[in-house]
Length: 276
Ligand code: ATR
View 1 (cartoon, rainbow, N blue to C red):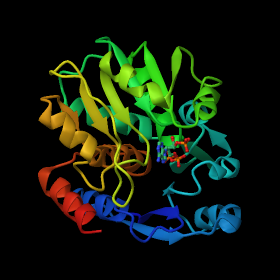
View 2 (cartoon, rainbow, N blue to C red):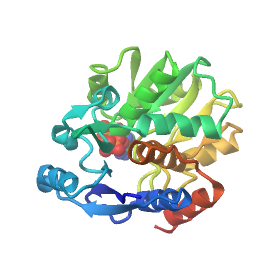
View 3 (cartoon, protein in one colour):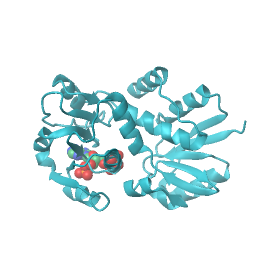
View 4 (cartoon, rainbow, N blue to C red):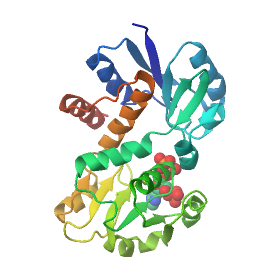
């Protein structure tokens, strides 16, 4: 069996949970493969990408701060990654470097797994934040059939910029997020609020089970936003599954197998995330 080498490029990258996830699947499927972390400075990105493929790698993930800049290193950027404006997965196809983005699919797959009853036509989705993560979430929601998306960001101009790429977005001021939340059937936090060491997201949630709260932050797993949702009786979705699910689709691009997330893997990754 030919050895397949994969990796994650970032800076810093040593705390990445991706090696644990991919190593688990390589073993579980009895594959001959490796998945390393490669710390790459922004100024070395272009030369590193060339070198990694020259060294025989099958592909790799990219994470902060390279997700946008790496697009210039690709021969082809697929439609999904182009619309999102970021690449998280590189692979080779007939000698060409292909950039894709599995975050949107990972976001939706995690939602469907944790809340199987989710109905994209149930009503408006409120997305908080307007960074790269928000763009992946918006793409995923629209692909899944959500028609009505309200976007709220502290810096309104950044939210407005997203309407260059996506149609049917309603932009609301950050100060109006509580009003927007009352009418939403899904609320997604894509901001860095709620992350360990950051301020909490302060939001008045609607009451009752008609609205799903989804936080893509996963350190901690139960953010204050999700604790509040739970206390109000709302269904909620934690963020670590998005990391696990996006990894499934990257793994498929390199190894040709779409792996499952079993409880052993989930527990292992959850524990590692909590310990960091
Ligand atoms: P990513 O690419 O991972 O989404 P990012 O581009 O740094 O990360 O985006 C972080 C998001 O969190 C942004 O929407 C940011 O709002 P601004 O565009 O106004 O910067 C949001 N954010 C960060 N700190 C915030 C705070 N204290 N209050 C509200 N929003 C905040």
